[in-house]
Structure formats: C-alpha cells, structure tokens
Length: 143
Image (spheres, rainbow, N blue to C red):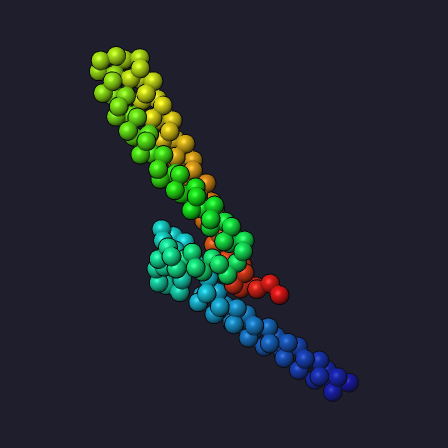
C-alpha cells in the first residue's frame, strides 16, 4: 500500500516537472521567435526591416498569403490619398471661380481619401493576421 502511494506520488511529481520543462521551453521559444507588432514589427526586442519580415513570412504559407494581401492593400491605401488630396486642392482652387464644380471636386477628393483610409485599415488587419499565422506556425509547426 505504501509502495503504491509512493509510486503514485513519484509519478505525479515526474509528470508535473516534465510539464514545467515543456512550458519553460515554449515560453523561451515564444520570447525569441515570435513577431510583435506595435508601431513596427519586432522580434526578440529588435526592429525588423520590411525585407526581413517578408523573408520570415515565407516560413508559413498562410502568413505569406496574408502578408501579400497586406502589401497590396497598403500600396493602394498609400497612393489613393495623394490623388484625393490633389482633388481637394484642385476643388478649392476651382471653387474660387465656380462654386458647384469646385465643391463637387472637394467632395470627390474627400471620398477618395476615405476609400484610401479603408484600404489602410484593411491592410492593418491583414498584417495582424499574417503575424498571428506566422507565430502560430513557428510555435506549433505542422508535421
């Protein structure tokens, strides 16, 4: 009876320490290998350049797809406001001579700026999804 209790106690302690080692190993991997996103993308406390991030995303096919969508939407979201701002400035200049076309041009420019901000918002969502997929595949690789 005492031997079986001792064996059971030993088994519980052994399993608990094994689980603790596994958790510590996972925590170490999490701190060293995962990407974090605040204003810039960092890994292990250091800032990463866009080309490095692009190369890291190649580890995960799903992260690569999200990252490509991010780049596409970011590009559109950064170009549209240039045209929108140009339309607003043109509309203000035209409105000094003829109000109706000038106001329509200003409204059109603001609409273009709004659409650009929607693309940037969608790009941010894709970037978060890409980082999440990358971190998942780094911590729990598919076999």
